[in-house]
Image (tube, rainbow over all chains, first blue to last red; front, side):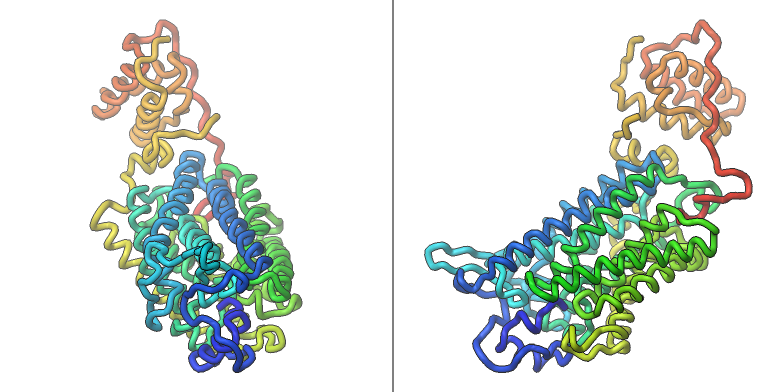
Length: 447
Length: 103
């Protein structure tokens, strides 16, 4: 959970303290703070925090559009480049609408330990009353307008769904993708976000630490990707013929956008323009660099050379692994987390992938799933009490990440099955061989 | 040349014929060139018809006819067709790059 204890205010901290021992770091007693979305006076809003969170929202959206789109499109075959990009763009639109309809309310308003309430469906109540000089805020970030907080969280929902695309590229029917992602956002992503990030969520109360989404975003997307790869089956010719990537230069540009955008992802998750955000930014960069070098070292030892794709994959692995830890660890710990993630994710995308016998096409599980697990567990190892104000537990982290893994895997499988009842999940053989650009969109890449 | 079908339709038909030829005959063609160049398209149409009749693959003939129609011509070319394009470059023998994984 992001900075909740310090930011929730004193009374809120007392409320949280009763619920969540892991979060009980804020000073006790004092003035009231909202424990649910509420209207507050204009002067309760921090201009600096609001400006930073708006900037972070833009950065995180930039990670998806065009970051993930370029990152993935560069890795598929030429005949599927446009379909891959269209999938990411469509997901950004579809998830945004479902976030507006119900996702935000179910994820980030008080309800039960399992799911949020319905009060913010249709983004109802995100009011701005000029006459009364009142503005709506979330109880999770009571110093920024709730509209900004909801959009910041929307950008996380978008990128999480977009990451899953990498597991089923080059074979999933576009209509099936739209239906599946709609269901997945509402019935897998939103509940998990509620468990971990809403103060009443059961994992938040348990004390599981996930600063910016190691479990909610990356483990969740990774397991969903694994389920998709299993249930959709392998691409035709997989394992028998080379699937040469269209343009790894695009992938590098996408990776660079991810690296830069991740400052918004992690430092933005402090929900304030403060010292914790600064530290999160620093450890994010260190971990990315260490991840790139860790993967490069592994590749060098195993294959005798470093590759551009390896460097790009390694930096993403480092970024993934530091995500749950970003607000809780020191730069030295970030270096270790990054190196370990780079090495382990290299194994995840190669050795483990072969062992699983699954066509997780662009290694969503190998990089995001494994990186998220590594980062979540190492958060329990490296979280500094001085920085975080809480006592981290590897066991609690394992419970949190294990639960998310199982829920995401099973939930994704069920929703895919349901989607398959409405429309076939895969394109037919001829379409797959033709390429999805032509078969699904009647479009082609320029010469 | 007189294109009767829009470019995207020609490309879709060419892509389908490309897939059929690859599956039925092993011939690798250039889809985009097929949709753009009349002589090349005629050559592929003729080849597809021949193999379709010889191998008992009526869908080859069917799609060859569709391409010929889309290209706005049905007659055989006056000249010998150009040599088919070379097969796409493959990984060197013994170097299974991008087989079974991209990384």
